[in-house]
Image 1 (tube, rainbow, N blue to C red):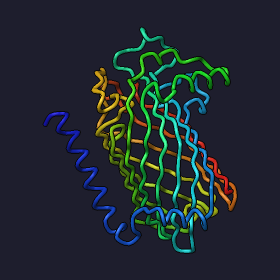
Image 2 (spheres, rainbow, N blue to C red; image 1 turned 90 degrees about the vertical axis):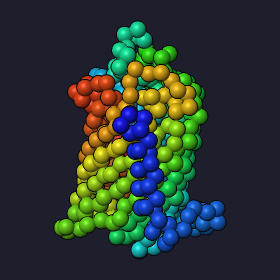
Image 3 (cartoon, rainbow, N blue to C red; image 1 turned 180 degrees about the vertical axis):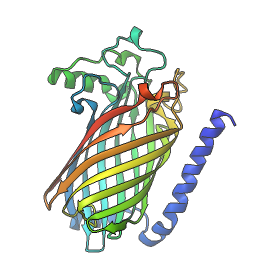
Image 4 (cartoon, helix red, strand yellow; image 1 turned 45 degrees about the horizontal axis):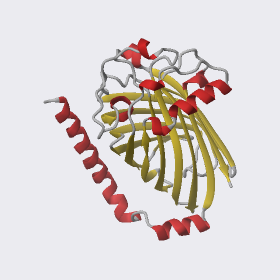
Length: 316
């Protein structure tokens, strides 16, 4: 089987998996609607959320691959003791660079990660139940390439925090507008011990920037919440395996047909270890993430990466 056929097969599998998982839930909860959104926004709880992903937060000297991800968003949640319904928006920018941002363009190996920026805005709907069952559907629209402002963002941030300036943004992937459909589904959680639960989750992206399907397992221990917006204090361990059909941060935009010396690995793993705390008004989460090599032409030792994730919540 050719590489193209293999990728097409993964894409078809992703769509089939999403359809099978979503069917029974959608039949029970309905699909997103403007009337429903207006009701939740008017009567629900409003929370502002800020997410920061950055390898520099680990205080290490190297800076590269998935080097930064910043997102700000707002959610509106209407909930009772048994379930919650959330609508939300998000605005984000993800930055990808070569393995070392200090490398000049002529020093970057052909098989290194290309420079790329992804600037996007999106909306989503999530239905959660107290038993852990949930379904989240969303849509992100944005721009890949120089239009994403990656060079400006990283250069000014590094000047502000007195870190080495990136040297290779002149080599970044070309401009392309993008659209990505997103979906997440969990069938529920298991409670093996008091204060401990385990929940599987299936996720997928479909679009010209990212197309993939993944399965993850989340283990939590501590003072747990039954619904996402409730008070909690717990440590967590998340493991994920992802089947990748397309990754424009490595390949360039799907419609651009940009010739690159690298291609994405079809299977990528990730482990996250962290802690989350929140009360009725404030919340925070801090974690460290280990992501396996995403580039087929690099060895696992060269391509694996570590970065930190911080999340802040404020109920308005």
